[in-house]
Image (cartoon, rainbow over all chains, first blue to last red; front, side, top):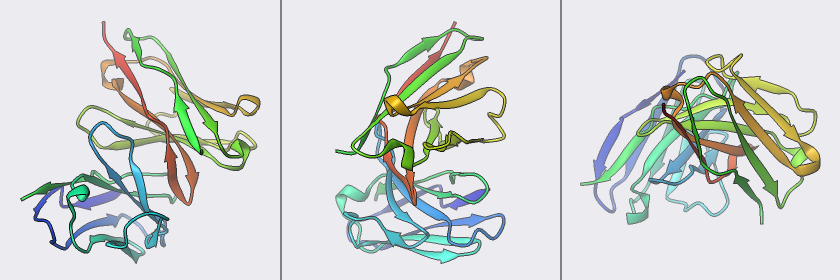
Amino acid sequence: RMTQSPSSLAASIGDRVSVTCRASEDIGNRVSWYQQKPGKAPKLLISGASSLLSGVPSRFSGSGSGTEFTLTIGSLQPDDFATYYCQHSFTSWTFGQGTRLEIK
Amino acid sequence: QVQLVQSGPEVKKPGASVKVSCKASGYAFSNFPIHWVRQAPGQSLEWMGWINGGNGATRYSQKFQGRVTITRDTSASTAFLEMNSLTSEDTAMYFCARQMRGLDIWGQGTLVTVSS
């Protein structure tokens, strides 16, 4: 199971924000992060806990291993307001409950 | 370009079955697993299972074991999700996605509505 927090977050353009996922057991670095906008399929941002996908802005970063993982957005841009999900790929592929990032 | 194109929306009655397709193009279908993920209205993403594009091996979420079958037709570069005994709680958008380190390519989604 992946416990994601917070469930929602209000922030301003230029803010630095972080989202956390905690796993119920040691899953190494087998975590991915996704961004989803309304009515669209999710978009993969980070795999292997910290590897940024090609084309994803460098303001996105991932860290962590074992049971605690973090997605950080360094300086929020208008396009970043969306819902973010973590996912582990250990024995199954479970998603976190999501974090809705809204404009303050 | 690399893409997954899913079949169109479905409306089913409770107790019926549904089969959704996911056609891959732009890459070697057999080299990558395909996953199925669903999302009920206003809810989080829910992983359902995956199929190895090469040997056809499958793995399912415990929640869907026995009610969902994932298959593939390598000659058509297409994966399929079939789910039976539908209830209103199965009303959701169903996505297929290619696995390469994460789920890097997604289909556009297929809306399945279960209503009497």
